[in-house]
Length: 305
Image (cartoon, rainbow, N blue to C red; front, side, top):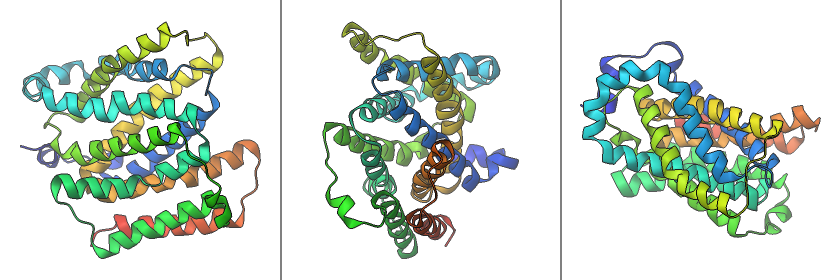
């Protein structure tokens, strides 16, 4: 029995049956994560934050998942290699490189790299599993991508030509490729309860990141007990890890990686609105154009044929 078949045997109701809402909320959580990642650059060690987000999540989840873990243990043990694969590429390595990349590049460049995620997910799904986007879905990806570029460029092509890329951008781009592989591979998840999967995912992700944290600590970049550090740990644990991963995994399970990937184009919309709300920046015409194009592209790609 596959993970999808297990879910169909126990159909979810309410929020966890609405893939579109789950994916949109996951994108919102990660949008704030990107803003936070830039805000703490140089102040909070990236690898320490990556380890903490997962191991703290393990402590939060443990009281709620113990009984289910015991029931799922035979399947967890039988599919432990696949769980390691999914956790390392989608959790430990992805998170560490994400926070490191955010410290080495600009928010605009991160937006450019992240905008490639739906295309990379479609490409990886085609290579690994033979999936294909139909013509309408491909058009939706292109329309949505044009909306992202409209926001990034502020409808000025000169802005795009002046972008300068560095090693941080290559890290972010490689990271998006890892995310594409993880998202496409979620269909291989063993048929265990979603909370059991999330718990094991966080445990393996945190433990696999420990060597990176040890190296970072030895190099002299150590944690400082500040309110900023405490807030960063709280947010990435509760929202960026527990809530966002639970919502994303379920959304991909419901509609597939290709259709789910387009929802990552909502992140620039959230970022623009959140930045405007926090910093008081006005909503500009290029925002509106970008929003319309992104939402149109999401509609075209995500809806059923």
